[in-house]
Length: 123
Image 1 (cartoon, rainbow, N blue to C red):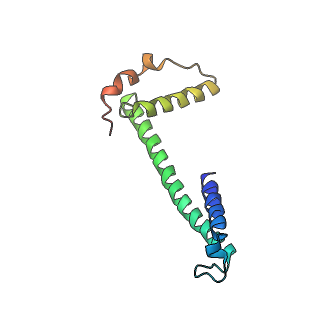
Image 2 (cartoon, rainbow, N blue to C red):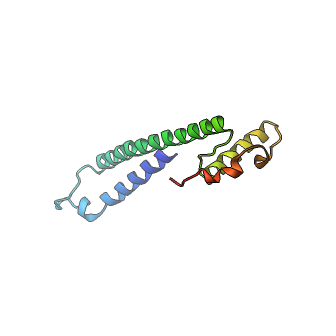
Image 3 (spheres, rainbow, N blue to C red):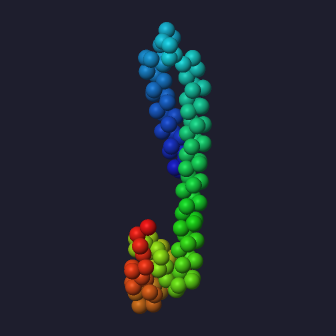
């Protein structure tokens, strides 16, 4: 969805910019002969840039999830995770367990998450 949106927006912007008199007037030094080719080229460049960005975003989120899981496996709780990230993952875990029919547990009762804030340095 993100790559399609970025490519569409860039293509639309290129289309409207190329309709300006500066680029549409044949007597102008900035005249673009084939506006269709220019819009297609803009879309291709936008697709490459958005794909690169989304690929980096995908790897980053996978790495965060892996580190969270490893921290939780090693320490019994995600002691190194920032509080907002920890809450996000715990809420997601609770939703999955509810969908699977398991009773949600009191996270403060069974984990050290509530006492782990002194481990987080904010970096």
